[in-house]
Length: 269
Image (tube, rainbow, N blue to C red; front, top):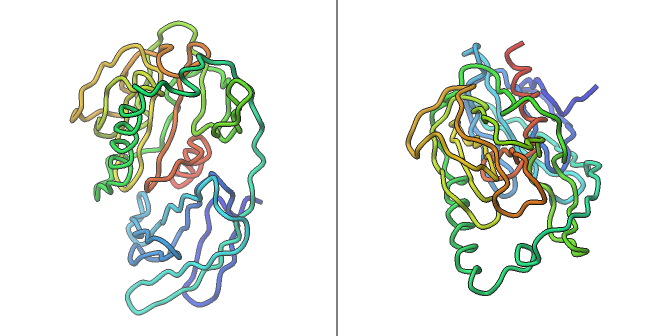
């Protein structure tokens, strides 16, 4: 039983729950009010889809989070509920990739651009839009085989550089990419590492990311609906071959996109 997936809480006892590095936990609460407090940040309790009497809190666990116990507190009007979160390391594979050496160790003239793009993305992901644009569950951006799963430890040209912060879908020819859900286009441009990039704001701290695109069919500020064609797949940026990289950011933290889609969609069952 995956008790991390969705957890129903009452007001009266200490709860012990489990979480995994790189994944998100959805807490189901008996009230759509209050705030979840952690040692370093806070998360607003949000309305439960299709049930205004309950609430949810989506808690992303960073890929590099320390293993062990951490204390959370849910504070709602007239109530305080302590929660103990036990974080475990998720089992992720290792991948070895060969790419253009300049993409692994960028030339000095690219460093300013890389830093500018990093700060731009950080500002986007840390912005909390207090509106929920999505009304239904999320969908995959295309129907294709997965060639690289989220969380893989990545060695580029025999140098360990990072982990894979999304899911790669096979897309050998330019094919239409769908919006995973309703949202606002907040970025559509070429970037050093991710190539042709689109970012959608779905509201309440959730962003979806589409990398290595060959064409954009939307503009910044445009509202898109779930299933709308927003781009064509491509082979731009740091890449070993044509594919779509699909990712989620939640409250500024990378999280396993397909795992979170499964958890959010379960709220509609």
